[in-house]
Every structure is written in structure tokens, then in C-alpha cells.
Image 1: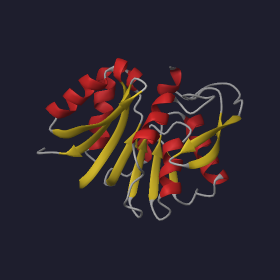
Image 2: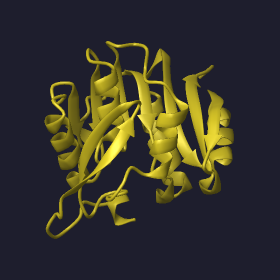
Image 3: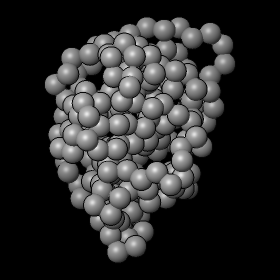
Length: 200
């Protein structure tokens, strides 16, 4: 779990694996010291299976906790005129996201940053995330409180969360924070939630 909190030490052992992202067959570079380093993780796989990419082809999107960048890549490939901010605390994950974007020819669409490098005035049409639930409930709440408020009034966030990792309790907590939350679907032990601004 150290990749949730710090950047890895030691040499990077880069490898790659195939992934189907909203119908795009791609190969993603990965490495040791990052989340789900050998395959597309099950939660993100469910996210792609149960959702459609944004219809706003020119939108400004955020991949929150991007890892090696599968969601950012999917957004950029599906919406060629959109711009995606991909953020992660793990520097190696950021390097791999940038590498994957460059390899796929979409690096002009994706800005890879540490969270504190994002202009605090920037707002988003959509936020997409397989959030780092294992950082703990309070840290996760703080993370979502920090970024969900950056949604535009007509914006939405799409999250995938494991049922056994508290998806239903997270939905309830979001509702207590005056977000409008809809469960889009469930599969393989994961819930996909849509979050929209409510009466905040």
C-alpha cells in the first residue's frame, strides 16, 4: 500500500500489459511500485464495462488518483478535443501516465501533475476515479471533499468502489454531504457511483 502515500524507492522495472478501455485496445506501460502493476485492476475494468465515455467531447476532465493512467488515456482517446488533468501522489505513477500518453499520441491532451500543482481555481466538467479507499475513511473523505467541490454546477463524478471496501457507506456519507449520488451498476464486487452537485 505504500504507493498510496509515497513515491517508490529503488529502480523501476518497466513492463507492459494489454487493456481494453471503452473499446480501445491499447498496451499500457507499468512498473513495480505502483497500483496494479501487472494488469488493469478489476475495479477500473468494471468502471469501463459499466459506463460510457463522456459525451462532452471538448470537456475538461480530472482523473483523480490516476495510477499509470488508464482512465486518463480512455478519456483522451474517446474525446479527442478534451483536456484531462491526471493527478497522483506517486511520482513513478505520474511518469508512467506521461509515458503511456506519449506512446499513444495523446500527450497533448493530458497534463500529468502532483495534486498540489493544480491551480486551485480550475473546475471540471467531469471527475473520474478509482479512489484509493485503502488510505482510510477519513483520508478518503478529505480527498473527495477537496476535489468534488471543483465540479462545475452541471458536472458529475464517476467513482468505482469495492463493495467490501465500503462502497455503500461511502454513498451514504456523500449524501450526508449534500451530493446527489446514483448507483450506476454493480459487478464483480464493485459499485459504480455517479456523484452530482446537490444543494450545497
